[in-house]
Length: 115
Image 1: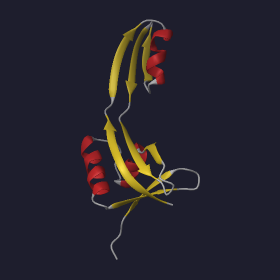
Image 2: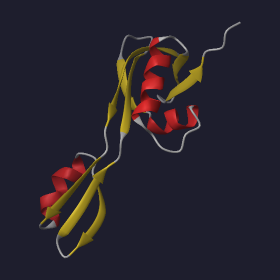
Image 3: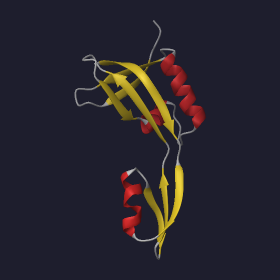
């Protein structure tokens, strides 16, 4: 089923360093951070960049998806950047991209072809 583009935003990557026990980092892990390195209670946590897409399905329900990997594949890129995100945003706003939601609830990104 086709979906209507509502909005998208870019979440920057982040790295933090903490000293303490595993209990001290649990809150960060719930917020999407991952452990990059740990030595004797010294933690390096990172949160990768993400692209969040919000679309509306045909029942007028808004759904949000993390689409970073789909955008990378769509533009044949290995790493996400703000420049790639801006191209995705402009293509979405200008109707160059069509969004569909599968029967399993997954979003797909398709290039609009002119006839």
